Image (cartoon, rainbow, N blue to C red; front, side, top):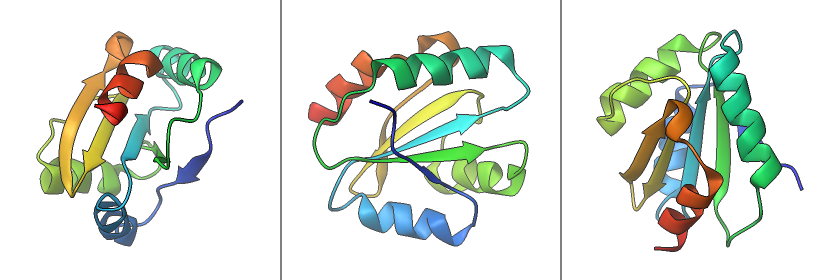
Length: 113
C-alpha cells in the first residue's frame, strides 16, 4: 500500500494542518526532489507504510515551496532539515526526525503513543 500523500503547497495549508491535528495526528514529509538521500527515505517510507488510525500525511516539495518550508520552521519551531518528517498532534510538534534516521516504524510508534 502506498502512502496517501496530500500535497502541501500553500501557506494556508499550515493553518489547516494545525487545526486538523486536534482531531487526528498529522505528518509532514519535507522532501528535496534533487537529493538522493531524500528520495531513498521517501521510498523507504512508502514501502513500509501501513495505515495506523486516522492520521493524515502531507508531502512538501521543499525546492518548489521553500517559503512554506521556512514557514514550517518558524511557526512550528523546528530546525529546517531535508528530508524531514514532522508529527503534529493538538497543534504542536511531538516528533521530528531527519535524514537517514527516518523510519516508518519509529513514526508509527509516535503516532500510536
